Amino acid sequence: MQLLYFAWVRERIGVGSEQVDPPQTVATVADLIAWLSLRSEGHAAAFAEPDRLRAAVDQAFVPLDAPVAGAREIAIFPPVTGG
Amino acid sequence: MQLLYFAWVRERIGVGSEQVDPPQTVATVADLIAWLSLRSEGHAAAFAEPDRLRAAVDQAFVPLDAPVAGAREIAIFPPVTGG
Amino acid sequence: MSSASIRVLVTTETIDPAAELVALEQGGAVATFTGLVRRDDGVSTLELEHYPGATEAALLHLAEQAVQRWSLSAATIIHRVGPMKPGERIVFTGAASAHRAAALEACAFLIDRLKTDAPFWKREVVAGQGRWVEARDSDDDAANRWR
Amino acid sequence: MSSASIRVLVTTETIDPAAELVALEQGGAVATFTGLVRRDDGVSTLELEHYPGATEAALLHLAEQAVQRWSLSAATIIHRVGPMKPGERIVFTGAASAHRAAALEACAFLIDRLKTDAPFWKREVVAGQGRWVEARDSDDDAANRWR
Image (cartoon, rainbow over all chains, first blue to last red):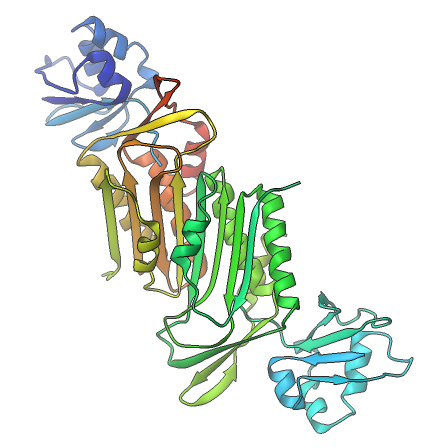
């Protein structure tokens, strides 16, 4: 599963993307975030406040309780601020 | 008192402006229109349907029951269609 | 009190909306509206008559109202008069503000209210026959939402 | 079904709203919005990050929604990315329609919804310090009025 990080999520983790293979117990984006938090201090800092995170599964915006099964690409990022 | 006519009011009357000196009994724009209707067939045709007329007194839009006393310039015209 | 740039013009010349838009770039947000002569209803020429003096005063009053109500940094209203052809520009309105909602709303206000508050009259020539365009209730409704 | 012209662009180059406006002149009514980097709050550089691929898809989806909902003849969304300076243009949206209300509403819809539905992130540099811009509830409110 390809992960993409943007804005301060990317900065805190220190990379813009990484390849991961989460266990079967990771069912939702929220589960994925909790699981990723254990990977490094940077991950823990980026994911400390899940309320401030948004996600996209295969480039479509989803709520954090969306399932991750079958996803090729998951992006995690702060609320968007374009325009 | 200077009168100005626009659009089909002007066309039916045949002139774009004229100078008039209405009697004291002409108190409102509606009175003025009724009095002007007697001046010619063109005036009668232009003013046959007062509901379709609008007016400005000294360049400010007014309802037809507005007074004409002291006015220098009165314009009579159809509803506007700009933009 | 306001240092807003107001530009009001009644002209027989072609309107240049591109130049007008760039001139409005005085706030964080610029909204514009351009109205064109329709190409699709058989009109060969559209003629715009107006009430000289009163027209300019009405447009200036509208622009000043918009500047005050939405704290604009700039407002522009340009209206073509005389004969014009399908596809040519009749009218341009624009508003600039620090805030996007203000610019968008003020721009809509200017074009909606111009249609009912400024003394212009349209005459269409269709198949060689001239006819005065009738005012539409929908224009009154659009203008009234700003009162 | 629709033969509308849709133009969506994410670019590091300067936006030319004047050319975009003229290209939109395909209906009787053209409305545009241009957003500029503010000059007044001490920001020396504004950087726009985005999610390549997903951004273009989001903008295209927005433009298609607007074309369908307001029967537009044309819709344009252009968003700058990368570093930019105060006064430079960040975003341009435009809509063309036979009817003025449709063009005005669609243009407002495009900019309001772009702010919540497209993956862009702003980073400001103020006095040499970078900081990520926080999302605003008012943007959600503006976007929600179209739902």
